[in-house]
Image 1: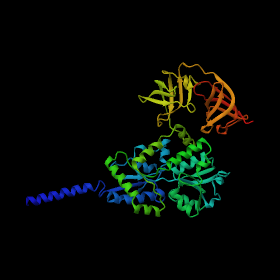
Image 2: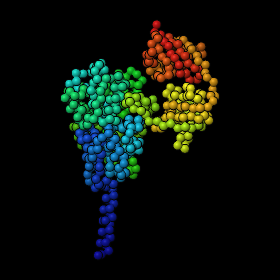
Image 3: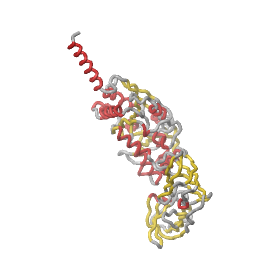
Image 4: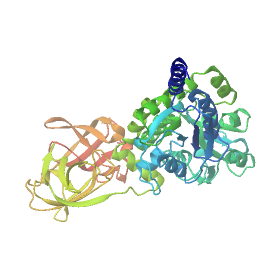
Length: 487
């Protein structure tokens, strides 16, 4: 063979190799797209439509869909998390897993903050709908029902299950929740009058509503009316509605397992966002009634991390609504350091220095077996500290110490005066003393509150009420008793 022929062949071969590399990592490969539900329903519709268009954008040989339902999307998410980090397995699952991880639900083998997020397709308002066959047509009808109203949800731990339980608790609704309805089974049950209502995403339920089979009792997010915020009259209700509203922005997520090479993740994200702006994709999504409000994976990462950072008080509200016990650990350690008027406590846990916080209203502090305040604590005391290790920083639920108190018990003051200011649903009360205006806190668990001699809740307080306040004099005031009259 002539030298020029050999050189020419080598050049062609080299050019072909470079061309193949330029076509991308996924060229000619098979991608598996895990969908953590049964076929049918919103997650399946979004996943299959996105996956079909990703096949072309990635240059993949094909995208294979794998439905892995069960345990409120946990099975699908666990499988995706444990998949080879080669970028050839991606998937979608329910945002209700954010609640599940916050509460440490059994069976979770993933960490949502460690997934490689590819993108999200939608910001999907939540709606509570009532079947046309139910005899109920407004939220007021539902709220006024003396008999339990049967609501459907998907698996225990899913967003529909979790959010229905939370809303029922927050808005004092007499709902009997029946889990296990997958795909469109709940709508079929509503048509048969077996189920009166459900909570779900607007995009999934819009066709059912538009067909005249159901009405919207309330919405969360978007421009749906009436909004749940109109009926949220307590701190707890407002916290729950606010959290659900925030999570509604994380609609129809797509993720890859942890550890995928950064350049492969970027190629997936680029292809995903190309799909989200492709006119053919948008036209098909519109025909299927699938709203698109996309965000790239790096933005999704920030939203997920923010959603996971809930305050201990909000976590308590979620856990109480779902009747879930928050997992805690108890360690025995000396107090190594105290800061911020003993609010911040440094101690040893698992061989490392750790800092936790004492809440003035939520942490039970005892010293030598008797109830105490955090001002009684001192460096060197030996304490049993109980807390949720998922908190950042962890907030103690209980601090039980032994040792000698370094601060004398504060004098209990009693003042009778009008309420001149209220904030945070009656938790913060401004009143007058000889030393001027002061602000004190009404604890939901430790303050004995009465109005006209009857036990009352702090949201019943009003500006102008005359009250007798009893409290320990100090920089931070938490009332022991508040006795008010309306006359």
